Image (tube, rainbow, N blue to C red):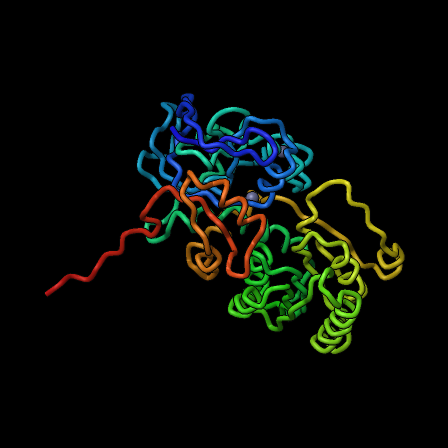
Length: 374
Ligand SMILES: [Zn+2]
Ligand SMILES: [Zn+2]
């Protein structure tokens, strides 16, 4: 089969590899769609894990082979996959810290080599411990929607870490695909979202997704840098104050890897509010923060990473019912041979790019039943 193999930092090659053999308790899935995820981009760009590997973990496809011992799945079923599934039984899982579970950290979907998701290949092997994470895609929904279950789950999990009441006001900094998911899911919960981004195109979509206010920020490196940043800060503080009658924001979600934005958010939230980090996934960055804002003002600085298995059904309902129509997020589709270009675009987004996916099926939408002709 064809697969895009990671051979080192920034080195993705289209190769021919064997279709992964499956054991009696495993599934073989033919990949239809795989989303390009920032965590994979990071591994590919910085070469943080040893090659060779086949990445891609936001995968949807069709079951084409079932091991003799597998129950509950049939050939031909359209499914969405989760590459990490917790054991639900260990110390970490009992604390609902699923992403810290030893089993969860193992990757259970592979197209060969060290398991790494495998979605950038024609076929993937689904190991027994991630079978509980296989979700069937209803006939009216597309593979594309199935492939969005995993990223949306990570966002819903993060939102559940926030102590919010209906009518609260939350800043979502950064309206990339993830930021927009936060905006939409928070709006669906009756939260007033103040959405910021550098790009007007993204802010328009944020409004469509239910943001109450949008605000365009300027890059710190722009020509009038110092001045611009100060103006922006004042302005954003003003808007935040107006939206909350001077109370301050109840929470801020940081969906951009910027320390400056974290500092700013820490000032904009009210006492006992929360700042949630979602994009600071690169290790080694130290922060200079006034710790009394945490101790005296009781402002929590928290993080969230990866998905929550127990939210799987809720996420499926949100997406498949189209209360959250994730199709609006997907702007670019690349064929498997152009996976490197897909990763490049996702790493360096343009004003008109959001979620980038690699597709291997022409017919992404399920066939529509056309009304009978007379
Ligand atoms: Zn991901
Ligand atoms: Zn566990």
